Length: 48
Image (tube, rainbow, N blue to C red):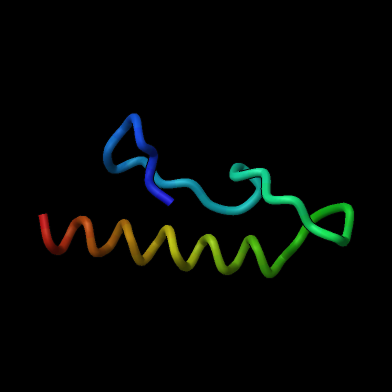
């Protein structure tokens, strides 16, 4: 979920523009990508 252009910039939720079959907001995608981005950001801080 980290930007390829700017290190330390992470994306989650609607900003990644994931298509969903619901035709609108998809809470599972929002929660899952927020978890993945948060975990990656925390690991980046801890190990760098």
